[in-house]
Length: 400
Image (cartoon, rainbow, N blue to C red; front, side, top):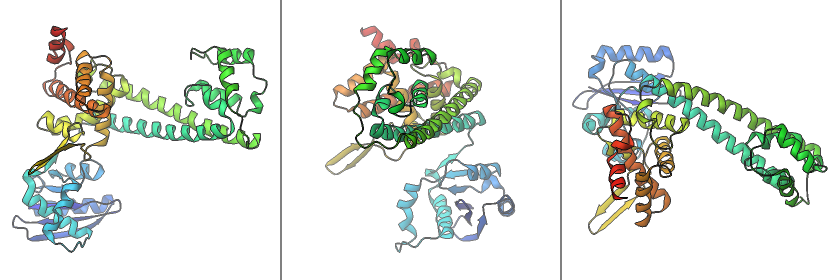
């Protein structure tokens, strides 16, 4: 028997068929604890859960966890592959949740050898992934808030937008709290700026005189809004960014704690240029792929570090892989881009890719694919990364 599960946020369509494709039963189940428990009880009456695989267009999440927890093998169906297979069941284009559930079950019946079985991710990795993704969401929100504040300042208080390097920095937020409008900074001179920098422990490398010059050199708005209105807008924006900064710091402290407790951290913490957050991203996003794949090339493909080759007749193209785990792609390419500044092997790999004509993003993906192989070897053999045992590093050392 095979089960197809068309999941939804409020209801799920579930279908069970036999080995010949004949319909056994179908259900529409609400997304509640009671109805899901009743469904799993009914599925158990049909046979042992371990012998009834469930095909679903998800690889993680609450529903996938419940299915696996009930003892059913979970078979991940890639949405793009399933969409391409739909003409098997008719060309009219009709669609319904119950029909999708049947097609998923039938797809599992005919193509189960092609489907990847989803294994439960270890709890430390799931917790680390939740923390990393929560931090990423807050960082994105802070970037959006910073861009909005910059747009307001560029229009009505340009000097304040240019005086410090980042609007999200504590010193920039403190300056806007003291001087939210051009009128409030009218009498700000070198002496007051020196006192301000001392009070807020400024370490930006610019003298108070230079900061004042940058402030005064900015153009003056010809259509500025009332100071009272600008004060309210700037105050609200800086308070928002301040709250985001504080919560990001809280998450980063928790990430540090979770990373220290993760069993795979000692294996990868010696990788080049891996700070706390970047190492946490590698373990949280790449780790589950390493656990469920059979070789490093599969991992590279899933995280978008391997290209897609299309060949037909006399034509052959090699292009960017759009279908990939986006979080894993960001994690491995960010690490690879940073590593080239500390690792001789990584820097040489990047330079050779650029010399062949690859643009920067392409060269970084080439390097990322190489790092996937290294990380795979460390992860699967429980070996701590050591540059002295990295064959690429050693070959380069012998030639220089």
